[in-house]
Image 1 (cartoon, rainbow, N blue to C red):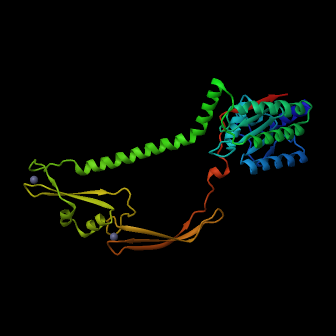
Image 2: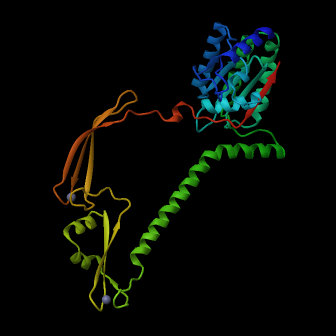
Image 3: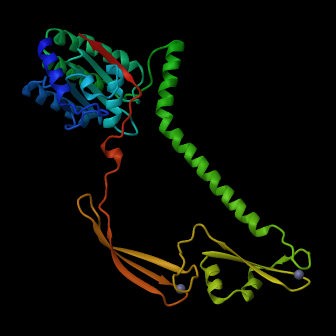
Length: 353
Ligand SMILES: [Zn+2]
Ligand SMILES: [Zn+2]
């Protein structure tokens, strides 16, 4: 057996191109990627059935992979643990938010196997995976029946995960170890929420700073450059007299604010313009006032398989500018959350035979 695998490894090395930076094998099947050709057609069908059931009942993505050896991929990974973590993250196994993917990796030439867990699993699952490897996989592997070992391990894995309920459910171990376990679980669970909250706080803070800064710029005292005395800001009602019709419309539709300042001695006037960040209006290409309104009407909705069409109508509220045209709406793309995006931070268990 070892001779056969040795031969396959040598063949694999011969077909690898030069000394180019290697890469991980592609994921060609959602459930089983038998690159080493270890699994019989019957067991392959049974494994796919098991993982399909698991996906349907729990939403968990489990993928089994067999490879001839770590070395033929020239990825630089020295251990099956590091290869498994990197392969897991390259394939983005499991849901992006739950991080509940599972990778079962068998490297025949290295006589090593690994069950790699997504970062959503609490660490107590490492021991459960170790038991599956030791009790359900290694006995068959040692007897040379890789196909049986992978099938039996998959069966035990699926049973375990279907029975377990939520994979991040609060650990049951007691005492300080239990507390540390629980804390780790909470931090993992809160990871995504914490990022969202931080982004919200930073974004909210930025908006507050922008509003305060704008208010300061508008209201700070001004001096007349010639008389050196403080100028006065006219009220909204009286400043209209000093604005042209376009400016008055901008102020009315709230796309721009104007302040008019007046010197009490030399009757110098200054007009200051402040764009409203949140206005729906844009600048008209003809009259240059910020009075251009854009209407969109979908004619054909874009789908995942074809692009759509929409009618766009840009009209100025101030001048007679009007531009109407139809444009293509790009085909929709599935968000990465609906097809994986899961990460592993190295949890799981390994075995060798
Ligand atoms: Zn003055
Ligand atoms: Zn215009």
